[in-house]
Amino acid sequence: MRRTPEVWDAARLLGFANLTVTARNWRSLWDVPASARARARVGPITADVHSLVMRSRAWSTSRRRVLASLMEGGELWRAFAAEVIRYGEPPCPGEPDWNVFLGIQDLRRGKWQPVALAPASPLAPLPRKGEFGRRMSYAGLAALQKKTRNQLERICTQTAAASRTVVRQIGDYQPPGNRLLPVLAPPGKRSASPQFLFVPERREPHPTLRRHLNGLFVRTAGAGLWQRFARCPVCGRFALRLIPQWRACSGPCRAKLWRAVKKEVKEEWKQRVRGRYRELVEARVSADTVQARLRDEFHLTPRRLSKLLG
Image (cartoon, rainbow, N blue to C red):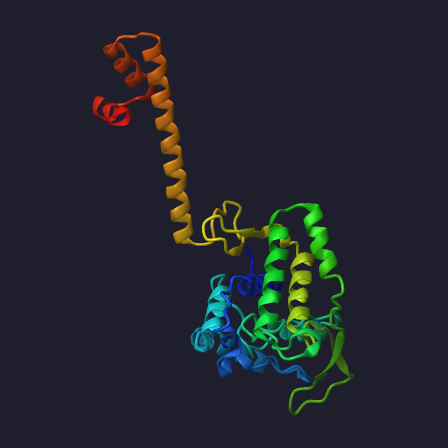
């Protein structure tokens, strides 16, 4: 599945819901490294394609180093970053946006169309403001996470009534507006006419944590990802079903699920053998005939049969 900005929004939302928040560690969610606070510049754009290409290449070679530095910080922040990175290598904070290059190329061809700037990195810090812009507290964070989990549980039921309930709860979300960015001529050159890029803004100006989470719900719903939300039957964590054959959230959980299913099937099969044995005994069939029939019907060796019946 292609890692679109909405997929990273889903990873961010599910990562927050899967955190283990306690009164002792809740402040560590905002104990983030300096690299997580970097922001991509959003302002007048210089139509220097060579410079954009070189910056993008430089970021492609240093992304792994930046991702490694993002795994530093507090306990909850490291857990949140690990939840996001498990879906792949996300865009890093401060990384230049390749869509700007595509928009400039369209302007050179005489086309004009909106350019969607990439949203803030999935590994950007979560807003620290609580309800009504107040400072976040442990009680507020725990209550907000509980509400988010309840909403995800309703979505995972994949029923229309549950989804309508969640939509009513997040219906007051107002998306940010749009922005018009001027495109400046490269150094040493003059532009024949003013050029602009129309950018639908995705970053909330002064978000609270609740408004930010509501925005993640809205964008994932618009991308049709709610039907891919699921809860792991083994550990109970929320996850995004990236493949149709999804069974559990991770390799260890899939192994546990397989062992449990295998044990259940084995126990059911054992009960079938014993039930058939009781039927033959009640029908007063001789012991040798009972053994022979059971071996033929269930393809068992004498040793295996004696072990099942013993």
